[in-house]
Length: 298
Picture 1: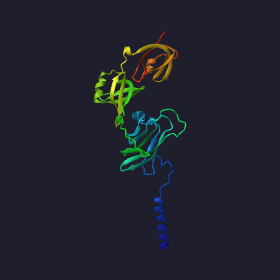
Picture 2 (picture 1 turned 90 degrees about the horizontal axis):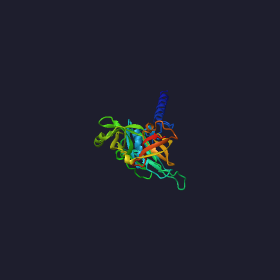
Picture 3 (picture 1 turned 180 degrees about the vertical axis):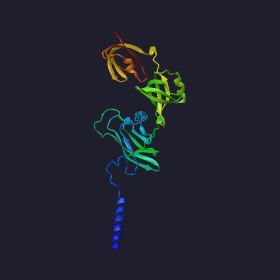
Picture 4 (picture 1 turned 90 degrees about the vertical axis):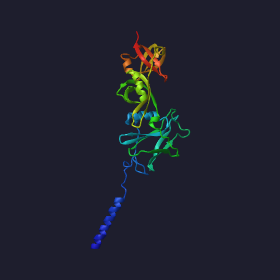
């Protein structure tokens, strides 16, 4: 009897041990964002608007280049990997594997291109992927399935040029600038801190900035855009309507012209479609017609 009880206990213990060592079944959701080679969690981000605004701005400028960069946001790393500018559609990039090699997180991606003879859109495209990973990860290496290594692009190396409205100085280190109607905060350097003393509030400016490792926008160049009387034109025409929030269309001598201004609502006032108008404008360095004034004519 004792032997029978002992044998039964041994069988039960063996069953428990085997059951405890058997991996739990995966229902698909538990494995989402993991690789088979390791258990480094990651999440692929499809909607850039869900990212910090500064990071979203950088991605739009970086995606033209082939390479990768990394941002830190709260408790995560944001890894951006770009294949660079392509002349047509049909190109793609996807994660193949993520593994840790000697303390470095190695991300392998698979780049695809359109098959010969396939129908593709004749437009510039920029294949890229965005991955979120734990903050504890610090060093990264990105290669494709062909063994080609991607270049690391520090955010400080990519300078972004914009036109905007200088709102004013927040304090000794920061200023507020409005771009496309949206106010943003920018950090000053020693050089730009001296330059802003010459700027008037709510004046149109051109400036260059980069994003530092703390995701702050740092202005490296800033200058007021001059609209000299001899550099501007005044013409009359018919107001057609708004193209978007910051641009309008006016027909002058039978030819449609587009004008931009980041304070368009203020300039339009009571002007309606079909009104005869007088426009004063100048051409910026990008060749765009920047509206200075628009008024109704009799």
